[in-house]
Length: 292
Length: 51
Image 1: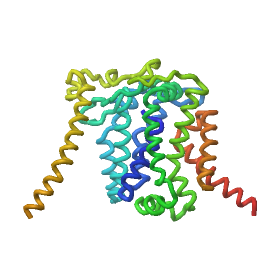
Image 2 (image 1 turned 30 degrees about the vertical axis):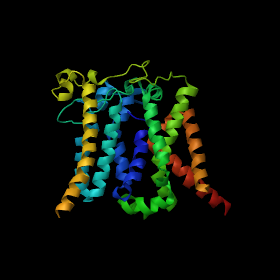
Image 3 (image 1 turned 180 degrees about the vertical axis):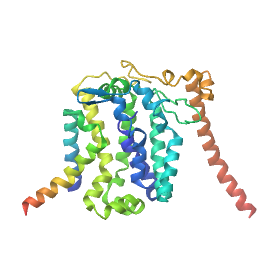
Image 4 (image 1 turned 45 degrees about the horizontal axis):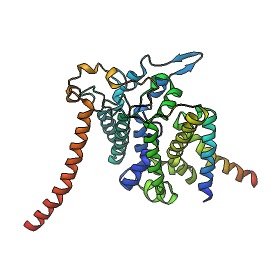
């Protein structure tokens, strides 16, 4: 899980896609996988009783559980539903991009996400930082802001700050308002100042909570910083192999001897293919233009 | 510049509040309510009282 990346990613995506994207569905998509489940992962106290999942990691990311909300197909299904209701492609694919960004970001922890559910329940995990959601919100926060998750969120915070132009009033009126039907609709009733405050809220929240949790973890408390891969190792992390009866999973990822190596190989192949495409496409175009 | 300083002050206040009590930094909606109150609600109230 990520604590600030899901708030900040939409601004970076907005900067790169401009008018091609609608910000509000993008933001909702970015929050969607955890929207209705996170409270049950950490638990809530009601009239002295704690309501919490018996196996938080399984509930959050696994199957049986609500792990399907972190799958690519789930994003696609909701996007199709959005398109069926509103008949606006921009709303559908903006939501899809946000939801996929969330699902891919969450592969960074030791549990990972079921990206290709329902085809496989395999949890795709890079395992860069520890998943400790089962230990409650505060321990999870302490662990997250002591491991590589803290660095990952920092990367997004810096990237979002570098994309500061998307936060300006001018950008909001010329690009966001022009492309997003939600803001056009809300603009009819809300004041201009309130509308732009709503637009900036996720950035405000993400940046503030990153700073607040970091100070809380390392100044107010003294959680030990451990930036090693899969860390911090002082916390009991849940791993993908402990969920979903992974040994029985028939997908190629599980059947290879070294699943992580398989993932790395897959990334390398994708990068190579992209480079190959960059070489082949201009050459083909040149050839076609000569033939003409 | 005035707007930026307003957001900055709101951010510092929200961060301090979050460090003091983490319940305020658990949900996006708390952040949304805080920023709307701090940069729109309070300035509006101040302007109204000054009249």
